[in-house]
Length: 168
Image (cartoon, rainbow, N blue to C red):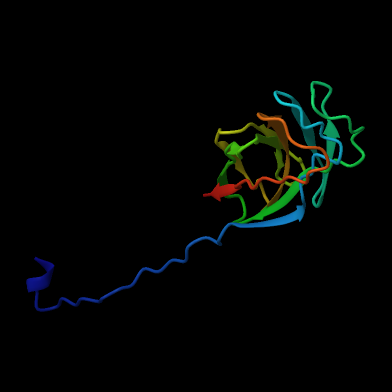
């Protein structure tokens, strides 16, 4: 009806938008189980990770460990800064990593770096749903359980890769 009126006009309007910032992950501390893992078959070494400050995490030897003789002085937690859109909800996923003679199940916590400083624990092979809560960054402290499945030789240096996955 309006288009057929002698006093009608049309205008081609445009709606615009911009997508949110990319999620970025920066490693500031490498996870290490120390230098005194026994390497005995069927033993575990457990690092408990904790958030201390925006770029400071700590790793301590868990008393349930059966395969570490380290007092914890050579252990370090993995530390990551995760950035993205302010107040955005994110999902963090870390899967158990498997090597020929051992495996690693990551665990630890995420801190939103906000004034309220909310920490949320995470476990291997599970989604962790958190948000930046008034900030655009958070800190991920990573420890976990190293399980020796086949005996390792003395004085061998070992490593295992693991993936930190973060999505909106």
